[in-house]
Amino acid sequence: MFNVTVLRLKDIVKYIVCIFVLVLLIFSITGYFSGTKENTKQVTQKVENVTNQLSSHSLLSCLDATLPVVASINHSEEKGKEKLSENDILKSMLETQISSIEEIQHMEIAEETKNTEEEQNIELAETDVTTEVVTNNPITENYNTQYGKVKIRNQTEYELTQDMLTPDITIENKNIMIFHTHSCESYTSSELYPYTPTGNFRTTDLNFTVTRVGTELTNQLQQYGYNVIHDTSYHDYPSYNGSYTSSLKTVEGLLQTNPSDIIIDLHRDAIGSRSDYAPTVKIGEEIAAQIMFVIGTNAGGLWHPNWNQNLKFAVKVQEKAEELYPGLFKPIMLTTSRYNQHTGKYANIIEVGATGNTLEQCLTSMKYLAKIMDEIMK
Image 1 (cartoon, one colour):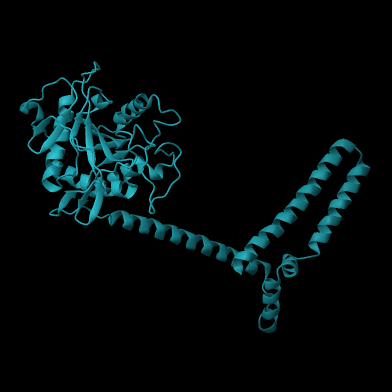
Image 2 (cartoon, rainbow, N blue to C red):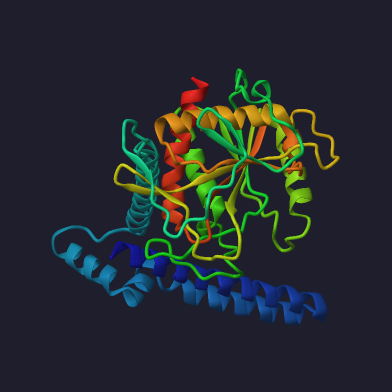
C-alpha cells in the first residue's frame, strides 16, 4: 500500500510543479514580447489567481481526493487522535522509501553472498577413480612418437629426441592466461544447454561456446589459488579470416599488464567432416570430453624460438594426466604452424571435445584439467 502511495504522491507534486513552471513560462514570454504594464498586470493577476486556487487546497486535501487510503487514515485518526500533519505524512513517506531502499540493498548483498558461496562450492576433481575411453565410433589414434605413455603425432620434419621431450621445466610464473582465437566454436545442443546455432556448430552466444568452457577452467583453477586472466573477446566474429592476427593483438596487450608464462588458446576440435564425432572418456561416473594439445613450431618459417619449451610443458601436463586419468588426452599434435605460441614460454592450444560432444561434457573435462595442472605446478 505504501509503495503505491509514494508513486502517486510523486505524480501530484509533478503536476503542481508543471503548473507553476507553465505559468511562469507564460509570464516570462508575455512580459518579454508585450513591453506594456497593462499586459504585465494581467499576467500577474493570472498568476495570483492560480496561486490562490492552489493555496485553497492543502496537500492533504489533494491526497485525500486522489488517494483513498490517505483519506481513510486521516478520518480514522480524527476519531481518536489529532489529524496527521503534512509533515507527518511526508516523514512517513520518506521513511517508507528509505526502508524500501534498505531492503533492496539487503537483497543485493544476499545475492552477492549467494554467488560467492556458489563459486566457493565449485566441485573439484577427485583422484583414484576408474577411467576409460568410451567414444562411440572412434577415429583411430594416429601418432608416430612416444615419450613414456605420452603419444605425439609429429607433423614436422624435426626428429624428436628424448632430450627434446623430457619435461625438465620449472614453472615459476604461475599466472595463467586463457583466450579463444575461435570464440564462437560450439558443440552439439543438449537438453541442459540448448541453443540455436548461427553457423556450422558456431554461435555468437558465448554462453554456449568454447568461451564458456574457458570460464569453467578459470573458475576451477582459481579454486586452487591461481591468478587467471580469461579474455572473452570475439576474434572470429564478424570475420573468421584474420582470427589469429586479432587474437595476437589481444594477447600482446594483456601481457603488458599481466605477465604470464602459461598461455592457453582454448578451442574445440573440428576434425574431419563427421559432425557426430564425440571423443569421450568416462571418469568415475562422469562423462567428459577428451582433450588434445596442439603445439606449433617454427617449421613454417615464422620466428618461434621457444617452441620446444611449449612442447615440454604439454608433455609434462599429459604425463601427469596419464597417471591420474589415463585416456583423458588424445595424442599431442606437433605442427608446422606457429599459432601465436611465440608469446609465452608455455603457450599452447588446447582443444576440448569435438562437434559431437555436448557442452556439459566439456565443462566436466575442465575440472580434471585444472586438477592435473595444479599437480604439476605445486
